[in-house]
Length: 517
Image 1 (cartoon, helix red, strand yellow):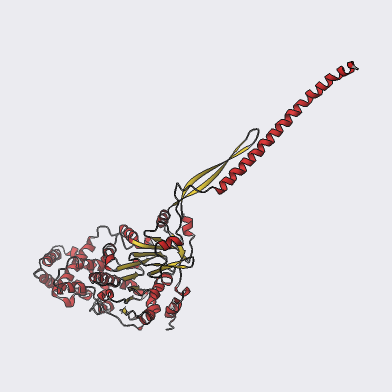
Image 2 (cartoon, one colour):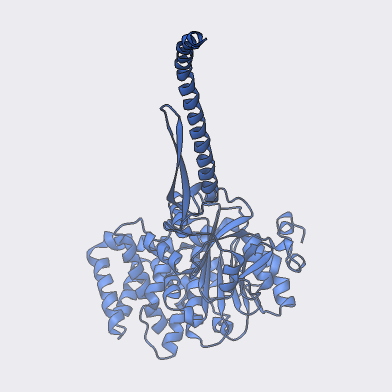
């Protein structure tokens, strides 16, 4: 028996030896499975951590404005100029700063901004540039005059809507200075620059500068010695005079007894005598600039006398409409700019407690008036508030220099924008929106005996509003940049007919164009 058992031992050893590789293999498989399970658990945990990870904000924590931000900025108060709505709350600007609106043609500037404010505003005077056939006047004059008790004054040289015309002489300021015993400083030059504005693309523009000097000298002389002809029609007669008459006028100016006028007139007379071609270039340029004010025509009659004192706007809230047909804007634009220039200066000189807001629709269509930049820089404390309406930055740069456009944008307490397509404007909006920190995720996969995956987390900086976000803000929405508010506002535009009681206070402009009034 012992011999038999001893004989079996080698068999067991051989069997055990044969089983060991299988045992080692099973152990490796179990170890591998355990490591895979641990890897899956770690990956799941890392994935969970990644999903709940919040940006650190180290690269920026910008965002859009909330209702709390708007409340802190005073935009939820119910007084001031209407801007739009956010989450059902109407937004108003009650400050005394200037405003600028960029919105393409047909986007509803009048419907969503001009007409709501003509229905709402009652605490200040309004000067409304209404160059689209008097649409705004047609829709709002009854409410403003009868409903709000605001006296309405119509500067209406083309007799639209059956309304009267109030004559304004933009050169009256020169006559008033002389009558008050004062001195004409830069006022005549500023009027001449409005009559013949310098285009920023002209370069040196020596012809334009010469015609401005010619018109300025004559205006200053007329204010002192010929006030009956100190009008735009009087200037037209002077530059269109024959040679004999022109020589007589130069003799009168050079011997007038006021040294400044006499010396400037003598210099111009010398150019007339010694460089006739140069003088003719000056005169031809001035003739073209004054063509709209030809004696006996509409705009000459509208500026031949002075029927209204703009200083009145400082003492009671009035509404002044500057009305022209849309098809005559090219002719009437210099008249509009001259009236705006005169009104700004007249209101700035007057003392009073009532603010005046200029609603400058189609602003890029108007020749630049020097008083505009003066109002931006100096007249805010004098109760003058400007609201510019333009199709975009590019349209502004067609009339004003890039530096002037930048100053207008910088000085605007409210800049609201709709339908932005200009690449330079998009870049600025991206910059104004601020930066936010974005969490980024990556995955690394490794091979080997056991495949492994690693997830990494990073952060990057992105604008709050990128170009695709800006272009994606469609009709009925707008972006507003508010001075002093770090965040941009993205909110609704609200047409007047969506608000009680504005929808019954404002007339239907369609009736004007359909002839149903």
